[in-house]
Length: 237
Image 1 (tube, rainbow, N blue to C red):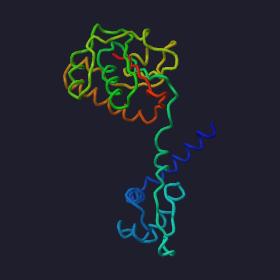
Image 2: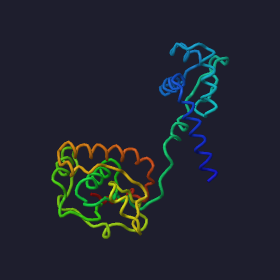
Image 3: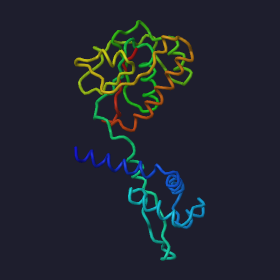
Image 4: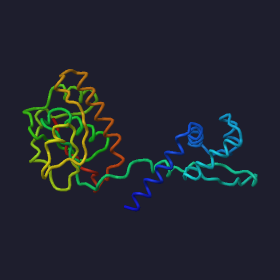
């Protein structure tokens, strides 16, 4: 717990340091290369005393270090610490054998999530539902194909046949989040609107975009295990 608290405090200091537009501009400039305080001031049109103040705050937050020039030993350069920015990424999720996206009918959102994960993250992917439909929704198949992904129109399954111990379960609809309260309990919840309620191409495209963004955000926080990467099961409405 003390380690987690310390990490949160360090991340909070970095966020606070980046909350000033001038300091964010300095960090942006240093992502491209090192620079002296004078060069930063000239590039950003900032007086020397203000640069010194902002550099001090960024150094105290662990974002910058000073290095002395090997040429003119009187000159120092500012260097961005990439590890500090990397620490802003949320801590890893639990170590899991598989990720399981959970919802009701296994006809649209979970199918799209499985296909997206396979394409963008990799790993073994399956899908299931608490009340699986007889087939995948045709519009889900269409939007997947539009984005170069493949769905099996007949590939629905029941949650009881899919979920195992060690799975990280993510509910991708509200019903599953609220209904699964016994041994199969979602650790995360994505409130993705059901596109089948509207049943238009735009609604399914919106669901695809929502899921794609969420998968891109969560992927860096998921611990991958084994040579084949993290296996993923998806259970959906």
